[in-house]
Length: 109
Image (cartoon, rainbow, N blue to C red; front, side, top):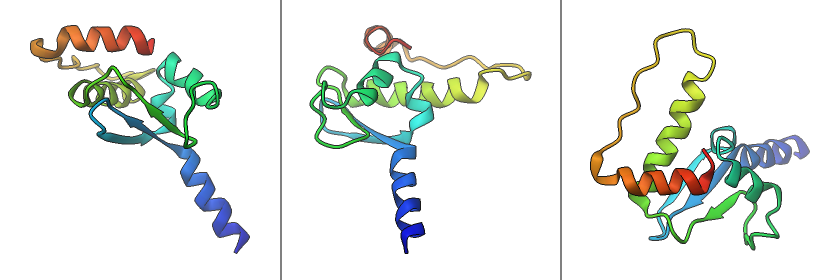
């Protein structure tokens, strides 16, 4: 029984929830989210950032269409870091380029 509880808490700490300013929730691997220096700091000191839940980060300034692309970049970065294969270009739509640049600057990624 204790083993099942340990496994459940392990799963809970393996993933994080990122919430956009329009309340969309993105659940992704913690290791992917830690690509961001800002998220890493927020998860290291949850009381400083007034997070009600552990492993949850709320972004008041980032809309869901941008946060979605950020999450896609985290997966891309994780996949191709130290890769010996050819790295494909990460697609960025011109319509969101400025918002994405601002988010990347804030997130330190």
